Image 1 (cartoon, rainbow, N blue to C red):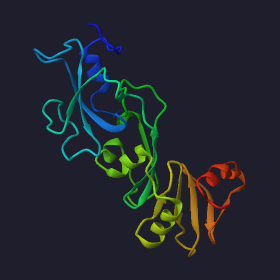
Image 2 (cartoon, rainbow, N blue to C red):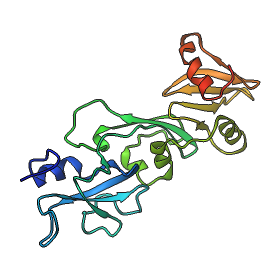
Image 3 (cartoon, rainbow, N blue to C red):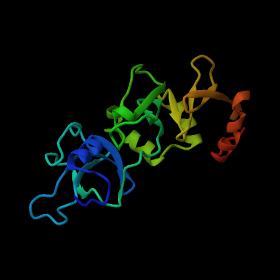
Image 4 (cartoon, helix red, strand yellow):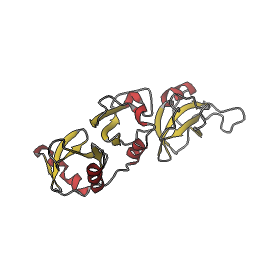
Length: 222
C-alpha cells in the first residue's frame, strides 16, 4: 500500500495513534480512531484519522472513531497534523500547580498517552496522582499546550485575592504563598522551590542564580 507516512498497515496506524493526543493546525486534538477509506471515497490508499479538539467533551474517552459525533475526519497524510509531543509545563488546575511533561521512554504510541505522560502535583490539595485523561477535558491543560499564562503581576494578584494555593506564570515558573509567614511568596522552577519574593523583590537561592537571566526576561525584578 502506498502511503505518504511510514505505517505498514491500518492496524499499525490504529495502534500508534488511536487514544493519543497530537496537534492539528496548531491545536491539541485527541485521536479516537483510524480507519480505511469507505467505498467510493477519494484517495482510497490513504487512511482517515478521527480526532476531537481539546478540551474533550464528557464521554469521548474510549469512544470509537466513526461512532463519536464530536470527531472530525482528516487524511492521515495532512500536513496540518503534527504527531510530535507539544511543549507542556505547569498546569494551573484545581487551585494548584501541576508540572507535566513527556517521559523519556519508548512507547508504541506516537502521540501523547497515559503511558508517556508524567505529572507531579507541585502544590495542590488532592494529594493523589493525575494522568493524561485527568486533564484532557480541561481548558487549563489546553492553555498550557498553547502557552497561555497570567502575567507575573496577575499571578500575584490571583494568589492574594482568590483561593489559589499556587499560580504558574509560565511553563517553567510558578509562585505559592507561605502557610505561616504573611507576605512571603515562594518561587518554583519546574518541580523545585528556588527562591522567594518579599517586598516585591525576588531572592534566588545561591544554587539557582543561573535562572536570573530567564526571570529578568519574564519581567521580574531581582
